[in-house]
Amino acid sequence: MDPITVLLVVFVAFLAGMEGILDEFEFHQPLVACTLVGLVTGHLEAGIMLGGSLQMIALGWANIGAAVAPDAALASVASSIIMVLALNGGSSDTQTAITTSIALAVPLSVAGLFLTMVVRTLAIPIVHAMDACADKGNFRGVEAWHIVAIIMQGVRIAIPAAALCFVPSDAVTAALNAMPAWLTDGMSIGGGMVAAVGYAMVINMMATREVWPFFALGFVLATISELTLIALGAIGLSLAFIYLGLKEAAQAGGGAGGSGDPLGDILNDY
Image 1 (cartoon, helix red, strand yellow):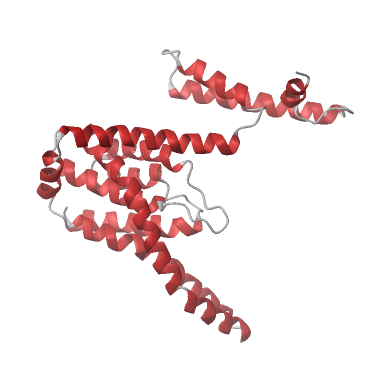
Image 2 (tube, one colour):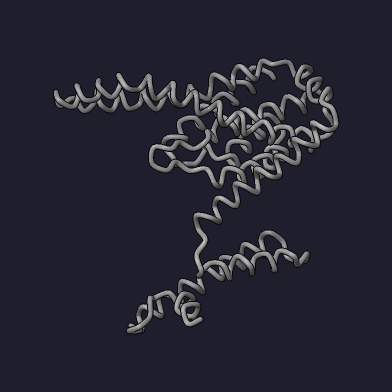
């Protein structure tokens, strides 16, 4: 990569690292991070494809209590850089580069957990420094230490990203080409299974008796080849508005025995 491209990739990685904590602009989400890396490296289409695949995996990743989810930021940025290096090295098979990057995303996300632990451990003295500033009424000091802590999260992703950018493209391509067919096929199957597991985790958290009919209806509509993704999205949005309208109508009607959920009341009758 040329120096300007490396700087842009590191900048995207820095934003993704900070957003892993801030969650404001979602730069750490695979669909956003991979797309941005693909954009600045000239592989926008491949970046979108990789980000869309990884997003299905990351759907089930969430911090619950003290349990920290796998690091989507490092997985997104590092896997997209590996994909770009493979494509720049002369790999004509874009799908192979994307598939391999997807398979590498999961171990990269686990490595990101270690980096998160290191950064949060280093942030402990910063918390005490912020407390000291707060005791003195020094709000500027509290804000300054807050900014330092957030910058540390960005550097956590920017440094590995910068290191990967200096890996020779030919070395990455040679490593991919040296993989036997059974390993490549296994990684492809494993990547598909991980995406299914991520989606299943989301369903497990959202599954209620009221939403199962929409889930089944979505599978039926997806089999109609004439419907595009935009059409399916419009249908889903319309069904959501219809459901909310029925729910508001039921609540406004003041049904004595109803729960305010029209589908729930119907299902409870059975």
